[in-house]
Image (cartoon, rainbow, N blue to C red):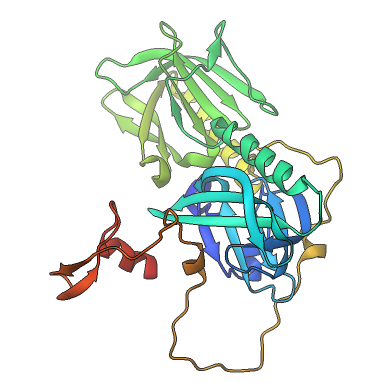
Length: 342
């Protein structure tokens, strides 16, 4: 069984010219703001478009050609700032600069509001991204964090404790550690009774499976985390067996409920509610024309961030290709570039 995190791409990927299906909100994804008259100054300068701000990503699409679009997940953001840019629609004006990193490739995006004097583009995207950055406890597996205060779980907003189980052994060491389990609507938390800072927080988003297996300590609750966290296997001993069965059943039930409508924890509301995405989406019409071209173009090429490169780097001989090539930037390999092209 795959975890929700293993199928989640919206917040951790940069994609270009996605289908109308991929533009739709996934379960748990919420449209926070919709900004009309936004220019993609970096890749489609002079083309007016619409920017959708969700709790996982930003989506820009051209008004004239909706199939020309891009989706940028907040987890890919490296830096977000404002500076002057040259827009075909506005001339020299303040724009939103977003530097991202995805699969070892850096992309730069520049968005300009065509509406003069409107700061909403900056405030919306920056504020929602900050809300995403400060709510990682909902989405990431965490070890040894400040989770417990006065022997009680420090609750996240909208988090509810469904069960507290005492006398739970963590089987990560040879002798085991005695502690306490908290089962909530968002995650499972265990902490050692003798040391509150020895703990683990496992969001349902990152849980791949919850099973009862035999171990050298007897029957144990085994939780396997998603591949994105490294595929951890965590074992817990709960006595008596009936209590173990009840805990496994409860966790699996809450995990299923969560998977239907995940809580990503990005809590931000606009004063003015945006329209529903269904009302904003323009149907992508399939042109009844076939264009033949020997020239290969890639949508992402215009967005490469190369540190304001002024001139070509010196040529070097590549033994791998058997010819002279421009010297690669530090940290880049030919294999990596082929993977990007693929």
